[in-house]
Length: 115
Length: 112
Image: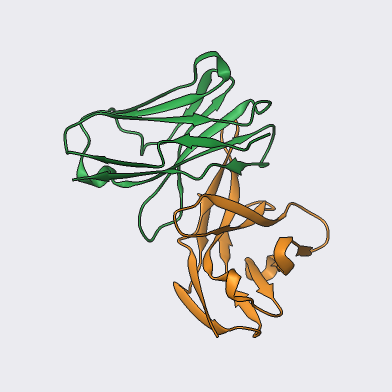
């Protein structure tokens, strides 16, 4: 079965510093991979997704992620973090059902930004 | 396009009571999903509708849970005889195809 591991529960970075959030997945075939962001009490906003092609994908808000098949990873990066990036970040892998598609999420990483 | 709407945003109920949540998807989206998110965890899939047909249900969806999507428009999720373990954020999402999900802001349920 598909699974996603986000090894870091909390990460704290200084404003302006670079950020990397780790994500490892388990999936037999070529995965569909996603990063979502969730602000407190809010729903999920899609940052970026990987389906195929270029392994470095660009997303919204200056985020990017790199798919590495050999490492089963899809890490999220941002070169310079802003205070408004403080939120919880979820990595997810797409999983086909008999009908439709579902997302399997990791447990999330809470990002704190210090000024 | 006003996005996916969920109502209510917050619900506090006593254990044993029944609760019902509503989700209004994006109007042209024929696929609708319910997910549950407990504290410190990522969302977990509960059930999936394509138009009015409920095509997938997770084992997480016990007999106390029922979901409907009459006429393929809005959807309701009902929990009967609520338990403290039902306390969670219930998220609805809709899509037109594939993984093009749009999530609502969720309904936070607290069972006391």
